[in-house]
Length: 529
Image (cartoon, rainbow, N blue to C red; front, side, top):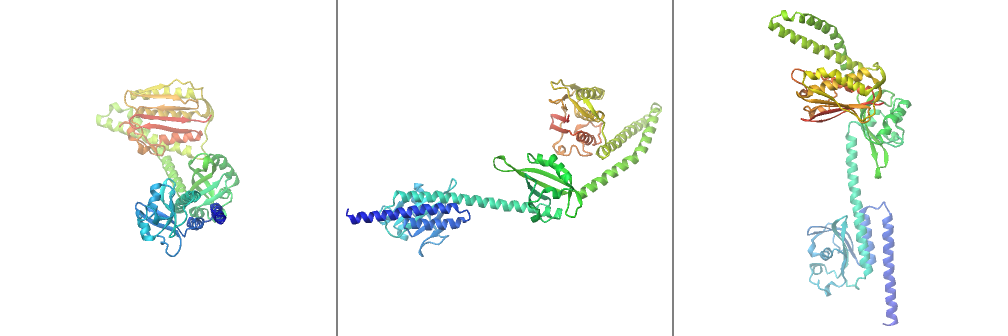
């Protein structure tokens, strides 16, 4: 080779290396810019590839089955328009797909593919392409071509195209994911805005990050001005804000806090009762970002509930005296029962039972009213819980014997539980749960009773029919009763479980149940020490 040829080859190699290095630098700079949209990135990549490979035409295709669609194109006037479609077998990319890697040729007319439809129709002499993968899915190709024969592609050019393909696949995947996130975000925002309740998010410093339009309307505050402010602006006082922080917010940072009621403040200073739900906002790796709260104004519900309670209480108080008189008269007649005709005895027995039921109902309503009133005060003292449970079981044995039901007090390894509470009220809880368990049991059945493992609570298990699924959610509501749990001659008022729940709540405790229809129910009461 002459000196001229050597110098020419050396110059050509330098030019090639210059184009190659420039392409890598530009790709690097393109990767660093987060503000460029995917379509612009593809356009720049095609121009970059055409310059680096010294080819006039660059195409990004989408391939669906046998359909090859031009997705993006960079080239002269004779280049196909975006959206143009071909049968994939009529394109050089069919070889790229078969190879599943970079494929190339520099002189199609002088090779074994001279009769290829793409050469016959478009006369493209040189081609280099690579499959495009978005994640694990092969979606199309990145290819460069030209109508002129060129020198054989170098390995560095093949590696550059392979790098272009991997980079574009990753960018495409990020774009798809970003679009999916944007669509989900738009949907979520639409849902949040459509919800009639106030939705508020706050960070771990209890500063408002977002509030929906319902929240803006409820509190009468401009949400743009609310963002960044302390949630204390929504509370009646700073003391209440601090108290709720200790009682609720710290808990909500860790786990969801189900429905609770609290007073809140509007812009005009008026106070209203709100029903609130809270749940934690978690980031990557379990990072605690803050909480999301849902608030509903229950002013009308509270007023209606108060009016209903007052009406029931008033009626109950008014009924108490005449019912007591009626019951006294019936009891006097009962003393003369044996002197009455048989048909009169039946009527007297019915009157006696119903008078007792009326008195029991009125007493329960008044009891529940007292428990729910602000004036209620309990006689809290230290109590040996083990002794109290044993006493309740012994007191209930005669009643259980009427139904042929056995009561078994389970032995326990738990430390003797000494709690602070109202002994009479806790005995009322035990008696109510025990009587329900007895009535739920079949003749010959057994009711088991025992202390919880920590000694600060007790459990009662029957082998009855269980609580129907339809009633489990409302078991502790007023006037709720499962007919299957009682015999035909023993009808409850539906207030017993409400009273039990109110007493347990007053003791800062918790009552739970585990039930299976046809297999029985276990109630567990946990009390604070």
